[in-house]
Length: 364
Image (cartoon, rainbow, N blue to C red; front, side, top):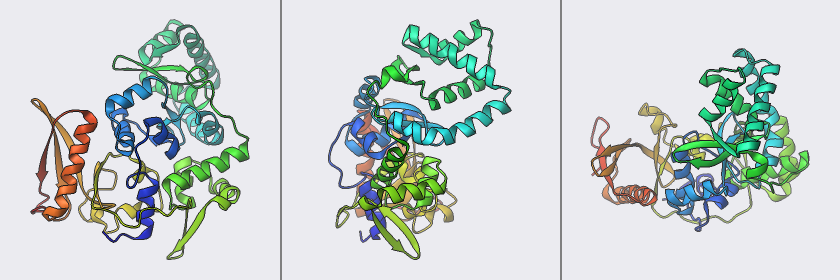
């Protein structure tokens, strides 16, 4: 497919085309951080970029080759243990302003927050890793019988301060552990070094992208983004199209794009990694005309959204239901079916596919 150069370069930067097999940890490091409110779908974002199964990603996560914590925007991300300290140094002060406001609105004043954080970190020093209910019990025994929402805010705050992060799973339960134990060799950078590294890493993995995109992704004010570009522009290329300047790391990228489809989860970096230029994944505006929204679990065909998908459990198999936004002839359906097969391989299970028309026949 003859795609605009910006789209093709972005797919390559995102490791959605032309990528060579790598480890889950390497993919997380390459992208800087990968948003993952939902662990399973975050793992799929990693797996489809490196060819790893869910079981392999579970192992990498349990062994600490990738961490899950609140960073950048106030939500969960996968982060490489080498990067977590300097990323927090650069971005956490800004996000902590939001977290502090949330705490105050819920009646968690500075004294309560400080005391609760001390209790939780002391408990983790003794027990290494604890589940959320176990941490709640620690606070309750100390006289802080807090609702679940308050505990979530406190844990968010503790992660942003660089005190705790994800620990190895306890069965199906998430645990928390001291960051100094999970990432003892994390790099520390000076403020300018960290800003430069974040800027370069973002445009190398998400570019071509705009300064506004990076501001959204990192939570940094635009003045800091501009300073980051000044610090790293010798290692970046700029592309100006229709009066908009995009930045990207130098790379030849793939010259052509073989027919290929991807099943992207709702919070895949191709969607949530941008603000002003996320439309590049939907140049035809299909998500607007079909009332679908760009933040659905989306089917990407040759770099463009053509539909959405969801899963349903059936007896003995997982069913993927596909809703297409435009008619796809058989040569274009084949890559979509291949993508569904790759999702089954990721899960190491059989997957059935069902195509659901959207008011008319969109496939044939």
